Length: 139
Image (cartoon, rainbow, N blue to C red):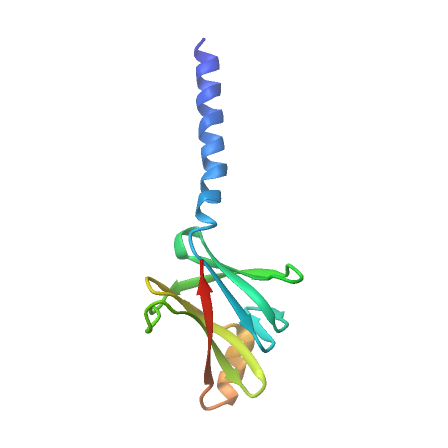
């Protein structure tokens, strides 16, 4: 009797630990059409339609290409909220013809991405990047 209670408790706790993160996946979703190739971390993306989903209580974002499904999960820090009410944006830093995603925001929250190694190398060579803002729609 005690053994079955212990087993049921362990199974319940195990399932809770496995399934709880699934509820966090759909907290925030933004969609945007990005008209240029860009980089997130070490991953390069082609121009196209993208979704951005908040993961892990806002500590990570999933960036996914709608057409081919390529994606990346990147760690983020808290950032500024969108300055214009009702508008979600993705902010990129431009170095010559290279773009790096640097921030994502909406009305109630914002996230900033840390510069990748490749971006840090460009920062050392360029005086100041040009910010590029792309409007996104939130769901």
